[in-house]
Length: 203
Image 1: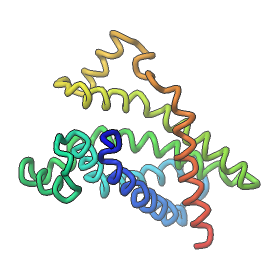
Image 2: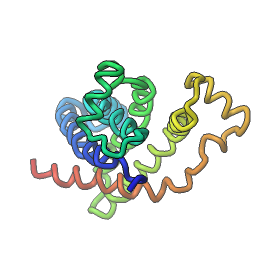
Image 3: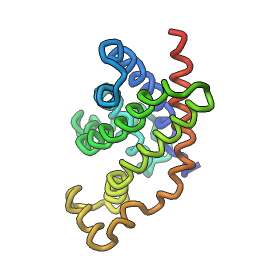
């Protein structure tokens, strides 16, 4: 069960963050025409809104994953963070996530919302969602690589310095290690996109 520690928080994040993102996008789309530039802008605003509201839950997930106490609960972790580090800790690393959000949502939602109208049936919409998700995953993969390695290695170097070190030692391949699983991972996120879009059609 250790491999799944903190997974409850992860699952609790997905629905609210996608719900906020979807509602914000649909609200803003009423005031813009269906053009790629407009959809990218709307997706960025929606993504930042959702990420800002729910970013503390990601910090909690990481805190639970790194905790040596197997009995630490969601609420206990919150109390521990507030007592030891203060409320600012809940937005630690937020600028990096902001960059990821802007790039990811531009492709994931921006591309999908623009091209889904050309899809004549559900099957075509699934393909649009899948390709948009793959594009989004590959665009942010280098940033995610730097972020994950810094966390795993407990690196003291800054984000950009650490990225430069990867480039010097491994070049482009270093930023895309493990990226072969992206097409498989993208299936789930493409389905999330389709489910929210399909469910929202009745509203």
